Image 1 (cartoon, rainbow, N blue to C red):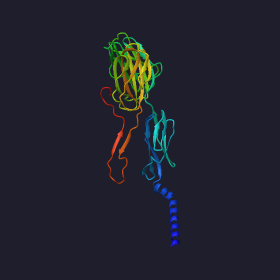
Image 2: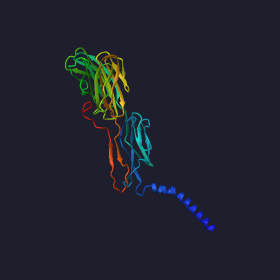
Image 3: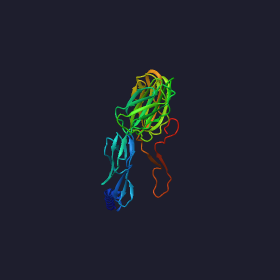
Image 4: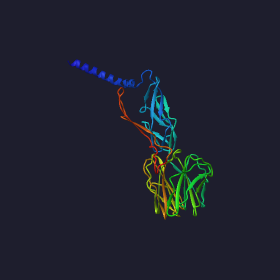
Length: 367
């Protein structure tokens, strides 16, 4: 009885060893496409996205076999970014924008390769330059000594001392200026208003003129600012304004922004010499002169924003908070709940499309 037992034990061990040796081969056989279904090409999507710096974009990889069938290879391909200073990408296909620039996302499976046509990483709006003019009773003029750039945005701010007058803006390149709300009065004589021109035509020595409906009492002031990186078709998102007197200025809260990436600008006008100025919390001081101050901040989340400032000397003042949309917004995302379904069986799922909210109509919103 002892001998058969030993033989059985040896036989079982040999079978176990043989099964263990064949296990990797079995795994290879399972992972290898069937005859006629060899991988022929790889497609990486989205093909040409844009993301703001600091934001992420999910990429997928789809393989097409030689017989025309397809397979999702998102989790099995090897990915690289051709410019890791601009974008990095994880093994799961999540790319993160690091700096302004462009790169190509590549995917590889054995000898088969695929790539995007490009990934652009941009920033929110950026202050470029400022110029100011102090002119006579009927119009104010200022001229940029440096060239402005085609496609940028011009922001114009004027202050005059007759509250019965209205004003309009033009420039030497024929750009169209749109008022940001109506004029705001402060004290007994001061009146302030802001305008913008989108996607501007440019040229050297751009001249900007504010024309009034009549003669001001004694003076008029114009300030012009250039910004880059803002939406070229409908840049204005939200705005609010307020007026008061003293050394502390507050625009009041804006309506909630409709996009996440934007530039929030604080503009402050004073009835008399009130400098120097201090920007409000979260804002960067950009420029100031005797009776005007500019500050801004970049934001990456929707919300209601307020611009505040402090002046050295008390004065009647008007404060504006203006939200402009950045040219590059977070990518649209699509989610499915439930995220998986069983092949061959019916299933009901909910599709959710996450995209920047549409521009809302009403006070304080563009449109």
